[in-house]
Length: 340
Ligand code: SAM
Image (tube, rainbow, N blue to C red; front, side):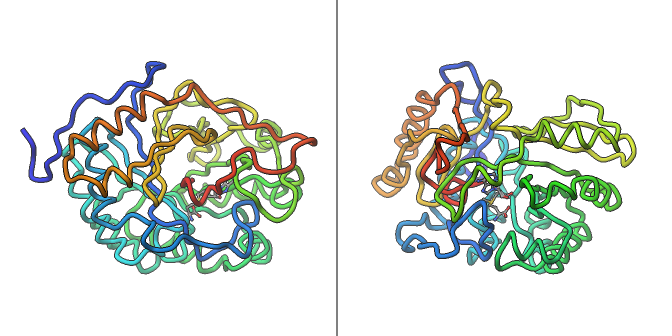
């Protein structure tokens, strides 16, 4: 029986490699109010508005995925919280919780959380990932170009006050924040946050050479072990991170290592860009144009069929390589387009 949202939870779609697709990441805008050096060039040209999915289209396509077995939605960007009426979208998606959807979450730079943490919590969000690569105000502004650490941290604490569980995302950058990893673990432990470290991925043209930024997390982990007791855990959030318990803080630390460890075997994810393009793999270029389907018919059976057809083409995995011969991007689109 369809519920009030027309959503009937069914078993998930299984891809050709036997993986159940239960997790959709949705980028709701390519725009961002920061310009992190590893993510974007300073002068970015953003998409004209008509190319970006309207709120109703985003809701309709999310409902189609939930109807077909997706149980977790992560809203991302660009910066999702710069989109006008974003809370309206969260309210509508939140209404799917308990009707096929288990979790609604987001990844944000934290800049607007002071204002929006409460409404997000009311919409049904329980956890939030906030990106913060350093604890130094000067470095923070160097990395983000336009950001201020105190503003991001105000957002983080507003989210904590609103009762949201917080995970801090930090990209590990050679020669930039690698000397701060112990402090980051301690700070997160002190405030009750999990920490997730991410390797830089070769996505989109940026200013400078990516080889200069790449720091393997295997190195970071061995260094952390000098100060912290890291015990592997089976904890999983449905995402690609491998988690360890940090005995001294009681919090967890996750490592996302697309470069040193191929995390594709257990991939349960697909990603929708803000223009309605569905990427079946973060690191491959094959995609399906769901916007064309959304705008050509109101028949949800056609939309469902297009989603099934796309997932039937999900590749086995990606092969990012950063080496000295290739300093550019392995994938031409920025992370802000596909959604981190
Ligand atoms: N604006 C939001 C934020 O700051 O979290 C959401 C979008 S952002 C693209 C999502 C995550 O991707 C952030 O944690 C960011 O640090 C990470 N990211 C961006 N470009 C990356 C790259 N080339 N390699 C690894 N992580 C990247």
